[in-house]
Image 1 (cartoon, rainbow, N blue to C red):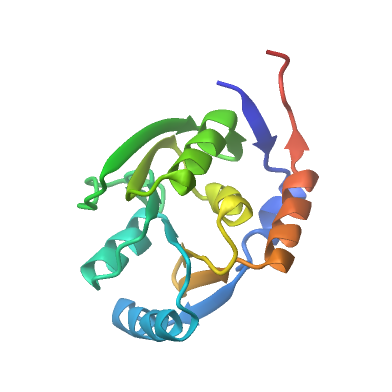
Image 2: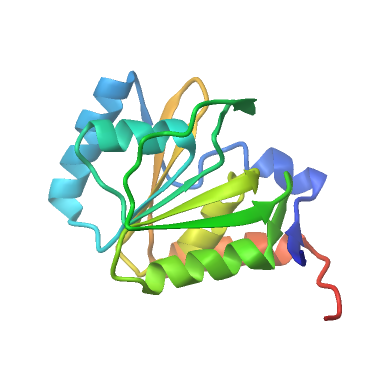
Length: 177
C-alpha cells in the first residue's frame, strides 16, 4: 500500500475549518438548505464523504454518484449504512494519510457512469481533498462538520487550486515502486 500524502500537524489544525460552505443546524435543517442549493446550482455530480452525511442524503432522497464511507461515526464502529450503489470498491487508507489506492478508486468512480460506494478500511476524512481535486467543476462534495452541520464544497477552478496547495503542503512520502 503506497501512501501518497501524509497529514502534517500544521495542516491538521487548518483542516479542522470547513473548506466549503458550512450549513449549520439539525439534519432536517441542513438537508432542506442543501436541497435549495441543489435546485439553484444544479451540480454536475454529488459526492458524499462520511457515513452520517451519506446516510442523511439518501434518507432525504438525494443520491450521490459517489459515497465514501468507513463504517464509523466519530471514529467509532457503526453498522454499514444502507446506501445502494451499483458498484462498491474497498480500499485501505490509514488515518492521517491518503493512499494511492484510494486516489485511484476515486478517479475510477468519477469516470464511471454508475453510482459508486467506496468503503474505506481506515479513515475517509482526507479523501474529501481528493474528491474535490478530481471532481468535475460545478460538482458538490458534501461532508459532515462534527457538532455543527454539513459542509458543501462547490468545485470550481479556484477551489481545485486551493486543494492542490493543501495536497502539496502535505508531506509527500511516495515510495519507489
